[in-house]
Image 1 (cartoon, helix red, strand yellow):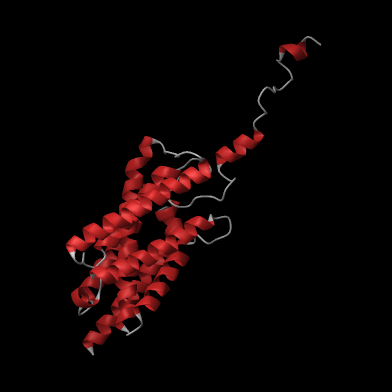
Image 2 (cartoon, rainbow, N blue to C red; image 1 turned 45 degrees about the vertical axis):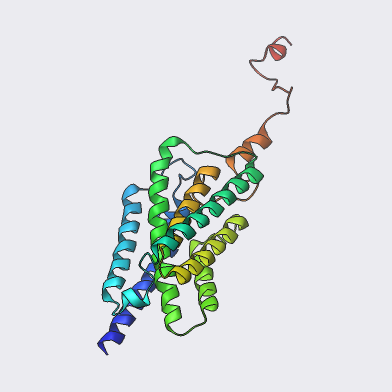
Length: 253
């Protein structure tokens, strides 16, 4: 009876983690860790609160669940596989980030150097909470019910994509597809290695690579809606000039 109660409490904390991820936009973390239209950055205190809450809930589940070390994927898993598979995942993720930026912008849109420390913190913190919540806990709990591994992996990947809200109107569909693939690959790696080490390594590097190559932490706008696209459309054609007050050709008349 006590073990069943502890499992139910662990499930409740897992649901709280999913709800916390769903509210990431309000905290200015994950895909939303960037300046708003006025140029203001998200509050550091609010972002840190999100990371601390997520980490605290993960630790609580690990302590409360009666068989967390055997039943959950909150450990690194096989270390050698974690490194090898994680680096392979990271290489693929980095290559797709470079290819996407080149096809979309015809260049790599490196962000300002001052934004790198915050983006690195966001990549590591967000990835840890994502992997622990969806692969370390949710996927493991689904498998604990006797569910088929492929079905359980697909369910957690879809739920993960939904909580990011990247499918909302005005968002780029490629980023939604990418997050579904990341979720599915991370789940497969967690099952294969027995932990989230490989998924964490590959996912964190992929997330940071997207930021470096596109200038966004993941919330890339659809084609033609970047500020530089609006500026390009308003620019005068080559050789044209505005004739008006202050222009010599206009004032001579």
